[in-house]
Length: 157
Image (tube, rainbow, N blue to C red; front, side, top):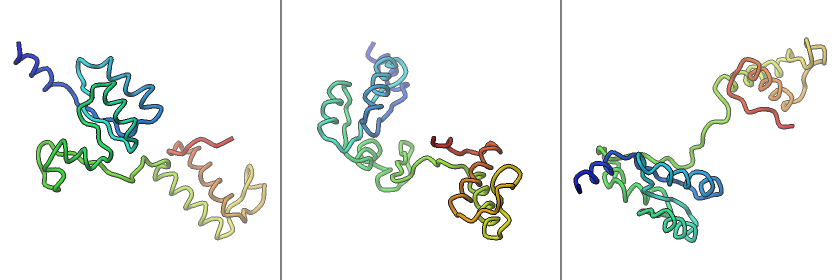
């Protein structure tokens, strides 16, 4: 019976939640309570010690750390020393998901180039006149990228 339980915990996918803000508390952490068959919440990472203590007790989490590098040291000692090992994983700080795709960047670059040359026109069919503003050139470039289906956030209204 004990070997069955060990095997079951070994087959589970282990997760760590980084950041214990509103969404984590309302949606992410409660979801783990319903997914205990195939997953296990093993660590919480937050800079707020009060939240760490409260939520680690509530969800019975073993590891509660203040900084992601501490989590790496606790989970995979080889990863902390930059030595490859089978259990290592990488936590990248300061990198965020890109808001704009490469195609959007190319579109804006092209619009800026046309603005500098004096060939960028505004309005339908270019009847609005020549674009003189840098901001307007960027807006036109993003609009063109949206029309092509590039990854661009929707307009703010």
